[in-house]
Every structure is written in structure tokens, then in C-alpha cells.
Image (cartoon, rainbow, N blue to C red):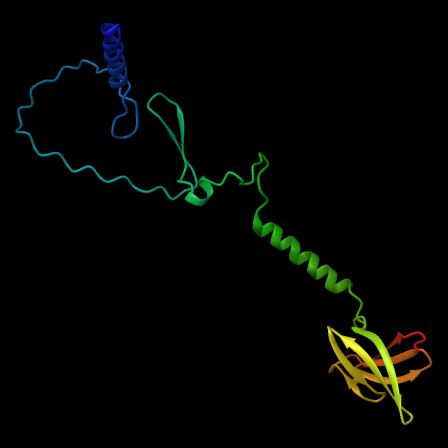
Length: 187
């Protein structure tokens, strides 16, 4: 049994040595017998081998010695290499530039088709209070409580113009357009 293990290890070593990669990463094949003639000139030192140049292209296609087309790709970033939850798809991703241009075109279309009137009233009616014949109206604007009376400015953009019955009339100051808010009946 011991001889079989030693023999198997020797065979595996020979096979590994036969197919071991060389310094360039290629597989070393059997040596070919060549004949050399003696060189009458004295041997000159060989020129130093240039260091490999980093490849900046996304992928480079080269033809190997056997006519095999080799694809060389740049190294993947470490954070992308180990991401098991990365997007997996065969479909090519749409270029970001095209998507940004589409988004800008949609925004431009919305701006041109948007009505030129005032925005919706940002107020919510909370109630009213009458003291000595003067009525004050309680409104809520973006989470803030505001007290308004007819003729007063509310929120820099609006003026409480008048109140009649259950409707409050506001003027949107930047466009000088009137808007109404129906408040209903309150006790």
C-alpha cells in the first residue's frame, strides 16, 4: 500500500510539473529540440526586460500563440467582488447619461405643461375666535399654528383678503391671484 501512495505522489508531481504555469501565466509545454550554431561573437548581456504595462482599457483582445482569442479585463474592485447581493442580470445596464437626459426632458415637459397659476393653498383651517366684535382665524401652515385677521399678511406669500360666511378669500401675492378656502360651519 505504501508503494502505491508513493507512486501516485510521484505521478502527480510529474503531471503538476508538466503543466505548471510559467512566469507569464501560460502553461509550459514540452521542450522542443532545437539546434544552435556556435556564435562567433562574444556574448553580450541581454537587454533588461521591460516591466509589464498596466492596461487601462476596459477589455483588450489579443490573439494567443495557438490562435485563441484571449480577453484581458481590468481587476474588479474589492467591494464589488465579494458582494453576493449585487445586481445579477444578462441585460445590459442603460447608460446613466441617457437616463439623466430622459429625467431632465421629463422635468422640462412637466414645467412647460404645469399651469401658471398659484400653488394650492398650504393652509388648514383650525377654528375662529370672536372677541369684542373682531374675529381671528386660526390656521395651520406646515405644522405651525398661525392667527390671521382680514387684511393681514399670512406666510409672506398670502394675504387674507376677506371672509364671507364659510369661505376665506386669500390673495397669492407673487401672482396677485385670488384663492378661496371653504372652512365649513364651526361651533
